[in-house]
Amino acid sequence: MFDGNLRTAVDRILDPIGAFLCRLRVTADALTVTGILIAVAGAIVIGQGHMFVGFVCLILTGIPDALDGAVAKAAGTSSVRGAFFDSVSDRVTDSLLFCGIAWHFASTEPGRIMMLPVAVMAIALLVSYQRAKAESLGYDAKGGIMERAERFIVLALGLLIDQILIPVLWVMLVLTAFTACQRFLKVWKQASKEMNLSAGDQK
Image (cartoon, rainbow, N blue to C red; front, side):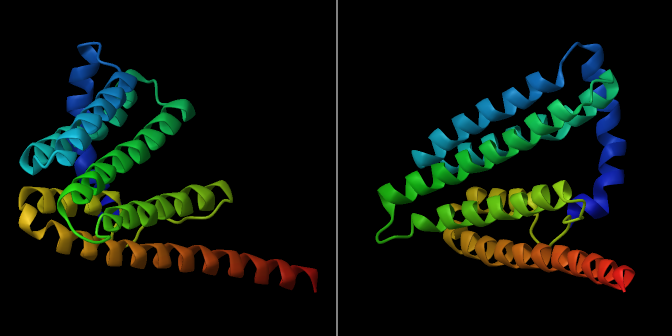
């Protein structure tokens, strides 16, 4: 949702910063790796129950994640390889943070509530997979009420106010599952339309 509606405005802010970092010889790959390392630290501190520090790590993880594309654009090094690395690093980062929460719940919460962040992570990966698979088939699966940017913001709120972390995760689970349904239906309609057109051409 934010990605589609605010991308142009965000790029206007990030592109000059990316150009500045490029002049400092900071590479896009270095920023991507930095984001992963911060996510590792975030998972560890969240797992140990330091939610505010985890919140800070989450914010710091988002900075290189937001800037690596702008640096690649400024340096003229945008490539399929870079896009692949960035996409994989996003999935790694997300998984690390949710695993950190599950680790924390396993130590502090009764029952099977530790599976809640695991469930959110699984549905989030499904949402990402839907877009990747759809694009490989020539379809558009962008959009939805709870994309990565929205999950980032909502998770940050849950870490900042850790008393509401569990309700926040339930909201994320429901809205992310709804997003998966939205993307499935979007691609299904595109594929059905194409199939109907092909059937019409054969008549």
